[in-house]
Amino acid sequence: MTYEEMRAIVLAFPGAEEGKSYGKPAFLVNGKFFTRLRREDQSLVLMDVSFDEREMLMEAEPGTFHITPHYKDYPSVLARMATLHPGSFRNFLERRFRKIAKKAALKAWEAGQD
Image (cartoon, rainbow, N blue to C red):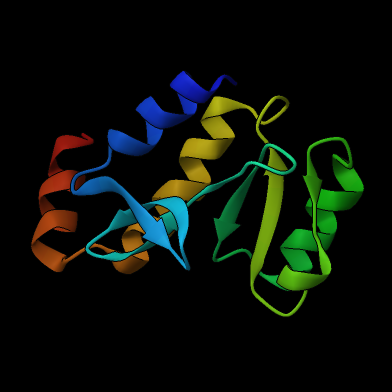
């Protein structure tokens, strides 16, 4: 996936916008962290991934999914943008969106998914 493809997927979610998280460029929804690209390793930060799921992902696709010591205690995983499937990325974002979007925005978005 290219940066442009990644950005288009992220910004397709209602209310998604570019911003900052801890001083780093990030994407936000409702003012809350949605995802970001780690420039140092070209990996996307994917939130709301259980520790068990993370282990399974890293075992199944070690070329894509990984973790750094900073993220080890958070329910998250890092995914190398170049090898992450766009559909998988969208699915991870949808999970996060459902958690952080305002109820009205979520309801409107769900209605448009049919």
